Length: 417
Image (cartoon, rainbow, N blue to C red; front, top):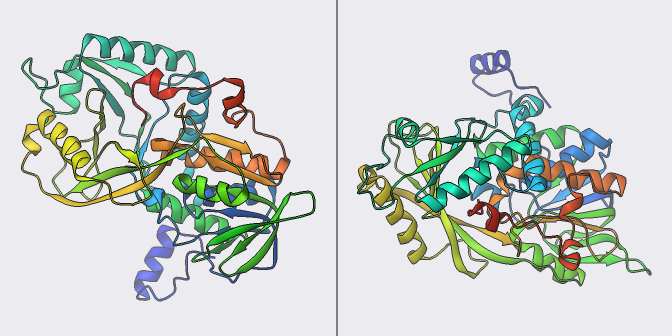
């Protein structure tokens, strides 16, 4: 598989771009693999890549019911940050940010990681106390975070209404300068291409319908719409559909699936060079390289597997942004979509062993899965290859729901994203 470069692009341009080969192979499944990863989104593809790169396991398959990146990886608002409150979360997400910072070079694929900064707005004295505590905690954990004044926020987000009479007055905020956005499909394609280059088989349109077990009950393979596939170990990375696969395997997860909507506007000239999140409304906004405003908000507050979302939530999110940025009131929306997010009672991921031997899981990221793709892939790959949890993953095992050692980020930070 060729290496991308400016010289290669120039040469192919002279040749009418007829020399490019497919970015990844699409083979028929083999009868047996050392590891099978269920889920062809960012976390599943990253797991397969790091199995091959970090652990030398190349007899690996990624099986995906639909197409690569067609789930939450392609249905999010692409925010990347690590300024979390709890030590365990801050270490995990900052590890992911560090991987993002070198990811384009490592994968030989531009994932368009733009560290434009992420600002969280405080709208009251109480909000200000929350973000001050939050900033202090992040700094104690070695993560960059700083308080910013109203004047600095106005300078960076000139469209924001910061007047005393604003519907949502701005008292200050929290900023992480290393945060930003990345291109969602580029992340999936980059990992797919790099994994394929190392020998991983990527099998699309292959639905898992069950699990094969030996006489001791250990999972030794998967049943699929393309036939049975034997496996040394099996990893699940299917986000909002984790409970569906867990049911097939015979255990229950403390996960509820909700639709999380997002929207993009018609293209505009540059009006925002940072990412803004609002504690009062839960809405967040950035501007893509194409010019569209990428907008998100809170969950649709009922369980669902529908990738649609409902109108009341859309009205609430768009209305809040129109109140905060009146100049955008007449901007037209281009499209809307929803991802199916896997929400856990403590708003933190589940990583590691399941009650079924031979089956491991990466789920529960809720609304923060995209920012954690490099870390989630690295940690699940480590556990699959070594049989032991990575130190960063240990606090996020299923056992915490029995011991009570929860890591409640939504309660600590006031926002789950």
